[in-house]
Length: 300
Image 1: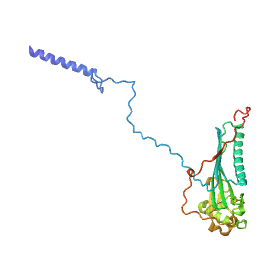
Image 2 (image 1 turned 135 degrees about the horizontal axis):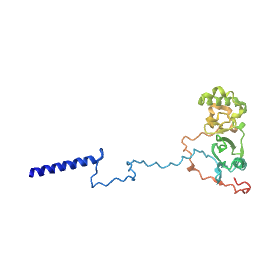
Image 3 (image 1 turned 180 degrees about the horizontal axis):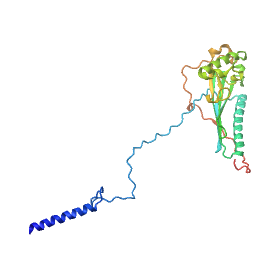
Image 4 (image 1 turned 60 degrees about the vertical axis):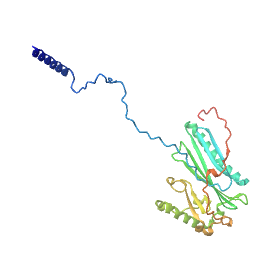
């Protein structure tokens, strides 16, 4: 009797096991009751990602400038979003010289601003900027060379415009010096041959297209401690793609073709600290007066 009851119990357990096996889908794992049920709406937790902090943005290095004579002055305009101007030029204390240099600086400013305003009459979104920097070399007690580098751009240009202006100054007489007092006109052919050789040495691909150089290649003559720099503004003589270039004709190469008021330059000191903005007083700022705006021109 006991054996029959035990056999019946085993059979009942087997039937229950088969029933549960049939009701459980294949490949599905039944979680234990203690496990939390999954939340189908919860976003999957992404794996941790190592983040490297971005380095702090470094301040731009100051431009290499040489101010060996005079004090820097500036015309600055940032009043309007469509035009910005930062134009540096030297004040020498020589009335005639300062009148010419300051007049040139203000003419450059006025011309650039007028062009932007004219563009905005047909295109209200037009905007532009002008940036002018300079170097001043005092090569002797009585002689200074100033070279101004002009960078001008506006939204209507495919490429920026670069120009160069040189002022050679006779300190003793308080006057500007013409190029024929720097290089002998009778020796221009020799100077041009030297210049051509230096251009081809740096840019040999131009050898076949340069031809003979004209006298106007010597318009920008900057006297430095090493010689006479011939500065060629972008696009005026060389292809625009090579930018503004400067080539030094050394005093040894020029010989007596170098005039400089018949006064040899003083040799450059053997140990000269690198010029830096930190060594010079801040520019004297000349802010243009507020201009009356024409109400009939709302785009300005």
